[in-house]
Length: 147
Image 1: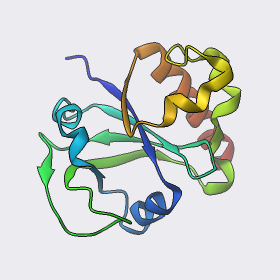
Image 2 (image 1 turned 90 degrees about the horizontal axis):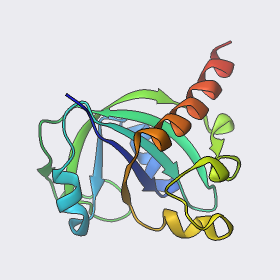
Image 3 (image 1 turned 180 degrees about the vertical axis):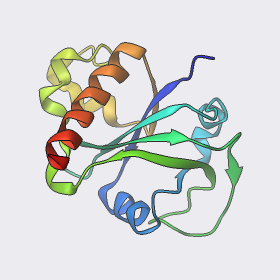
């Protein structure tokens, strides 16, 4: 079975909450519920940190069979549509990958000059090619860190 690949845009403050919580789940606004319902167990997620960072931070695997709803305030606002995740690669903050160096290679960014516009939405489905570019960049930083 082919798994989907996703890009999730997250504020830095919320990523720090995820880190404190052990990277066990992600929450999304209600407006993303239809897209989140498309996520399946085994799908891969690339985490992009906004908040003036513009960097890639992690790769997660979806471990939920389906999304669930929870209204407890965990992040800076309530994100009720949630999925369980498993962290596959999580970079240290000092080794986050700058997206700027990857922009020329990414197919989903049509207007390379105004690349930031493509990171305004919380959730985006990625092509296999774009996922591979992002995954390799993150994996390379993880290998360097471990070495």
